[in-house]
Image (cartoon, rainbow over all chains, first blue to last red; front, top):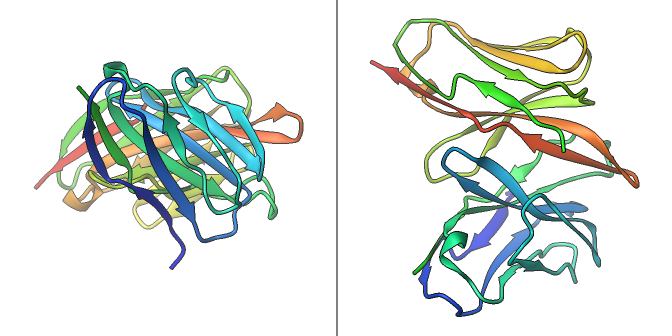
Length: 115
Length: 114
């Protein structure tokens, strides 16, 4: 089954404790992206990657890091989490090989609470 | 950064009523996608419209792309409780260096009351 898998689904942690949210896709997609979704603000892009070893900042990259060492994985790293990073996070992927209008496939989300 | 304004933000209607959700921008998009998101899940693509003036139908849902490719609408006929969810529009635009980026609207939260 084609899917984007995020882990963990839920996490409660404390300020300053480094954490990583993993994302893996099994569709051989070139493009992967991270979003955060907040009430009243919608989906905002954090980082994206056009392919292996190619990453770029989205609209709200501050406080986050990413890496793309393999095509299928795109982890999101919070080196020193703060309460304002409490949010619902989504990983997404899409093919760019078949043209630009391909659908974006989303994971089921990670609800992150930073105390 | 392109901006997409969605309206209304919230919509609560009775089963059987019709409704329209709007997605507007001052920017031109290569295409526009509509997604539906249910609680606890990620958004799922409903449709992509590419050509200015294009109309696509998905059962009781009708999607239209504006002639100038700056706006879009989603019309639901005879809404049912199963239509309840968050509807998101997303515009695809060229962002340079061979890259196309999706910009999402803030969404319309639809509740259909039985």
